[in-house]
Image (cartoon, rainbow, N blue to C red):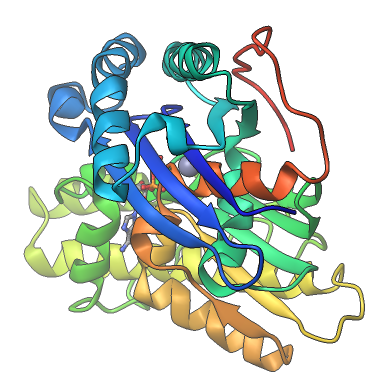
Amino acid sequence: RPPLTILGLESSCDDTAAAVVHLPVSGPPAILSSIVADQTDLHAAFGGVVPEIAARAHAEKLDLCVEQALTQANMTLGAIDAIAVTAGPGLIGGVVSGVMCAKGLSAATGKPLYGVNHLAGHALTPRLTDGVEYPYLMLLVSGGHCQFLLVKDADDFTRLGGTIDDAPGEAFDKVARLIGLGQPGGPAIESAALNGDNRRFAFPRPLLDRAGCDMSFSGLKTAVLRTRDQLVKENGGLTVQDQCDLAAGFQAAVVDVLAAKTRNAFASYPDAAQRSLCVAGGVAANTAIRSALETVASDQKASFVAPPLALCTDNAAMIAYAAAEQSTLRSEDDLKLSARPRWPL
Ligand code: KG4
Ligand code: ZN
């Protein structure tokens, strides 16, 4: 394979991103630039991502992100070998904006176009950052996703299980709102939990004893709601200690579920010279979750790989890299490439 420099675009949720990744003939890949423009401010007043607002912002910001990514990489569009874009799954308006932009760039330059599955981008990130060898286990935990994957090649993923309702990040955000903590809920709950007693409230661990890797978080959220209502009824409100104890109890339940299901996921890991447990997604920032997963990995004689947070959350470097790996396994896309709101791996 010749050296490859790929421009990647990502716009499937609420981050607009562009990046340039270079793969030398031998040696590790290099991220020459990675630009992420988030839309947190635009959606803050609505308590969640508003698809129409997201799509409009992506359409406005993509060009600028591409320009910045090229400038930061010290590159011209002409020096790029291929254009990669998230073609799904995600919010359709945003995905369409990205795909149209990428098609325009590909048509204007004559460079090949690759539509990439967003989840494949996350799942291949440990290879970009740490050169992890196939096969490896991946736990993808974010505001929108929660699944275990066995990653066997750049186009070969087995989904071992995942949430049957909410994603953990969504649960962190909702619970934070319920108990009067700020947004995003993950970091707010994590820091409140440091001062809390995780045994004061006995919250459920849904599906804990069931085999396999399916998870459920919505009952846990409801249990927190009931406890909060009870406390408010008894005392007229929540004290700071109540908030901390609720946060600690909730987080401990999430940790137990993720750790138990990770142990189950290892049952599907074939014999391999090296075993690795990798994580991606914003929830992987949580120290309690990380250290529980690290313990499971070391019990399983596997290494634990958590890419730097900026590459665990949505970014375009992972899309460019996934296209680079897949380019040796599949043919390029053409201008008929379409955006897919649903696209299981
Ligand atoms: O991957 P991500 O940035 O974006 C999407 O899901 O699109 O993940 C964001 C999610 C939010 O729900 C946020 O509350 C959660 O990750 N999160 C955390 C922590 N930091 C962010 N959850 C638990 N603990 C944290 N420290
Ligand atoms: Zn994502």
